[in-house]
Image 1 (cartoon, helix red, strand yellow):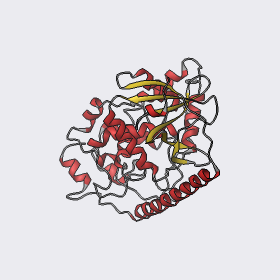
Image 2 (cartoon, helix red, strand yellow; image 1 turned 60 degrees about the vertical axis):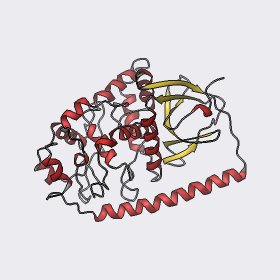
Image 3 (tube, one colour; image 1 turned 90 degrees about the vertical axis):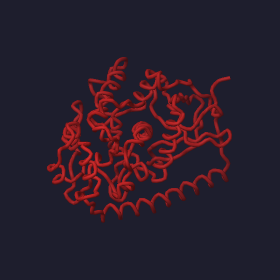
Image 4 (cartoon, helix red, strand yellow; image 1 turned 135 degrees about the horizontal axis):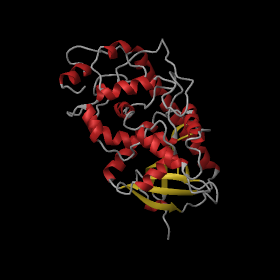
Length: 348
């Protein structure tokens, strides 16, 4: 008897395989209801958002590979994070998908035999220089991962989403949330330039900040859509949320992640390859056997109503967050501010 949905647990990573047994989509198990297993993932049309759906086979030749993290506490925390962000229906990011497609098609990574390993190495090499990206999302773990749809159409893709829920779960003990800091939002791309110019910034952050707003953030492809909106509010940078007593540069050198990959450029295929190679952290459970499911008209109607209800709830909380962001005037300095507390501890 092969692997079935009854064997799955929250936090398991589900890779949808193509005919070459390479992942072209990825999700995380977030709910088990009897024999039914539900996954949360960022998907395109018709949802164009992060959603929870039933894990099922749509075609006879559908194949799904399951990888499980060996720390059940971390896996459960990652599943909980996925459920939390799902409430906001974070948009599916077509521009980010286009970026990774351009990377995969570039001459450096398009080789059918060696390209995937090279892209995995590239994402690993960009993990530590872009570590503040993970800190930023960890600070946003109790709210939307990206700005509300009323303010931007940017969001996540499936592989970024799965990588981030695990990275955020790992960083939770070391990063405070925006609410804990009494802040509406943190941002590096839209951080106050005046404030940054006055701070003794971590060396790693200086390099990260410079590349973040550059069209040459990644040397392999050029991003022509890189620009700042002059009218956009400015917020505190991500590192104000860092709460470890260890200086941040030292922390960066010593921290080990289960997905040590730059979440902006990960693909399902390289997440799969990393999980297969990192056997000290990940267990490859193999390919799951899924049955074809057919739903009655009543079941389909109930599902459509549930989707509409979730869309309405997400719209309400997104509009509330958007209002807070638009009216936000954070206290940048002064006694008791997040910035002054971290400076007093010598964290930068």
